Image 1: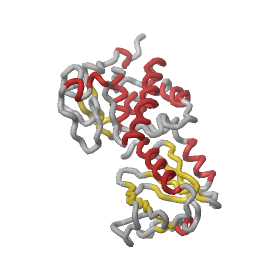
Image 2: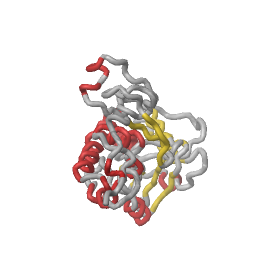
Image 3: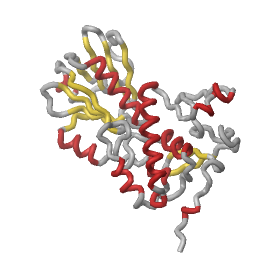
Image 4: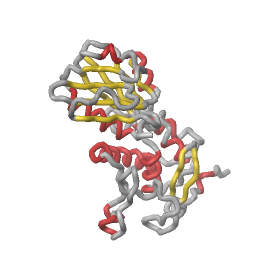
Length: 279
């Protein structure tokens, strides 16, 4: 599932190409009937909140809410797209200059009222990519929870937009035991995690890839071969199971946690003595 930086990057793309433009809107697949309500309207802006995207149009109170889920993808072309290629849930296009957005396979693509939009965002935790994010909301939930911090980092009610890659990498970068309960996380550790999300996720928006290694551990500095992976980017542990840790050399560990593959280093992230409450 795409992490939050992907949706922010997409919102920037839509705003750059469509702001002020009157758009054509259709649903070649036929599953987004509200596409007709948007057709012929001026694009008013796209905004990301965590893994949700909200798209507005002039004269329309409702906004289109998109959640990509596991299979959803956007495709952009700078020319007039053909009638239909595959199952296109929603197509937006402009005549001059010609530009087309195709959305395929999203988990959600629906027109939502202002009340519905507010309910969606109210249920989400702070988004590290948004200027209005309040990290105290995340801290309040974490320091009362008995769930593993690695699970909490991916809970969208705590950190909106943070996914499997950023959670594994941030926990590694600060040497935090991923199985330690959130209530044992110290305030300075929470602040370090939040600051990491705030620092790293904008780089993902800018570059379209996730890079988390410090300069001294980069391929250029160490002489190692660059990582080759469909997700791109240089990382410490994500999808590097059984490969040597870039710092200590111990094989990276993996385990399913909360339905997702967790990656960590048992040496650089040792088991915390805070895992159990002492009398």
